[in-house]
Length: 220
Image (cartoon, rainbow, N blue to C red; front, side, top):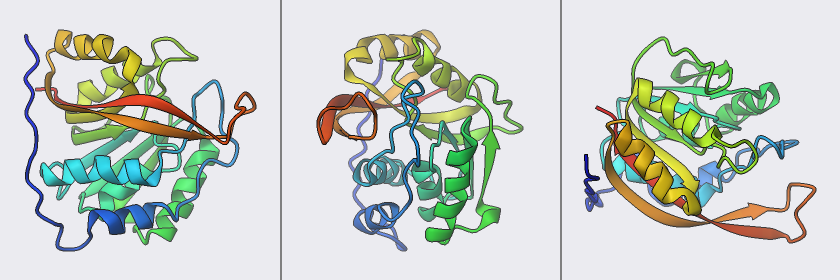
């Protein structure tokens, strides 16, 4: 199967929240308290999270939908999807302290507990109890744990109709081939300059920048 690229060009605004208002709200949330270097725990910048969610919103993949956020960290993507009208969001992470921050961030964003739930589990071991309309995730890039990125892709592909995922740009060809080999249809892709703030012991600059590719695809 050859990749098919479809670019969303609608720019209608949400009745309830603009993209800028979403970014401002997400920027108020708590980041990781003590990020795990091996697990590649980086907080998704509010602007990037808002852009990803707004793209899904314009494509009508959030409002009234069941959303999955794998490797949710402190919850910006999953909780943000609720702000844009998702019917319910399931946020999965192996880090219990991060999930504690999800609940704190839900309170900051005024997201009701009925609109989301958290699951303490790894992406590989997560056993979904339902099918999801949309998965949105910023998984490990596989830099420290080879294959971690495709483990997340495999789980999201198995239970979601639409997946939007971030990956290191250097692995773009590999990731796209994986998607196509698993019967996915690529809908869109775009590059992002991803800022990594100095939160790890090996960082020697205030901010490091990594080229990242956002890929959206349909699974079935």
